[in-house]
Length: 150
Image (spheres, rainbow, N blue to C red):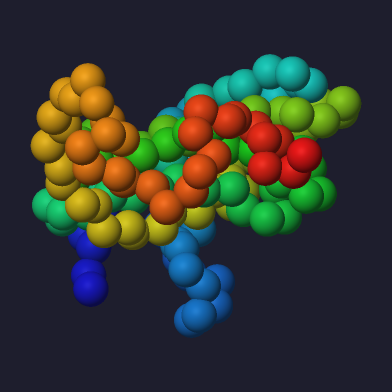
């Protein structure tokens, strides 16, 4: 499958797959002013990629952590979905969950994007969610986090 992209500025580092078997394309920090950004502990920054993507209908781009950024630098991506209807520049929200300030330089790999199929669905309200049409094979019920490990 092919996904088209456009650069917002000429000097943008284009998305790239580091290895042929990688699931996602790496995206880079491409600021319009060319300045590094500092992300202090407990804070987030919205970083420019300088890219727009033509996501086909029936798909989405899931923006995900890069393992090295998360494991080595404590920088994690906020929840990101790039819908097929969005045609603006993609920004990456990076959160510093560590205890040291992190500097992001122009051209640094900051995230990866993975193309994922989307199943379109129509919600229907039901007062008897499990009575008429059981949708689960578990007897867990409303048990939340940790309820199966008792």
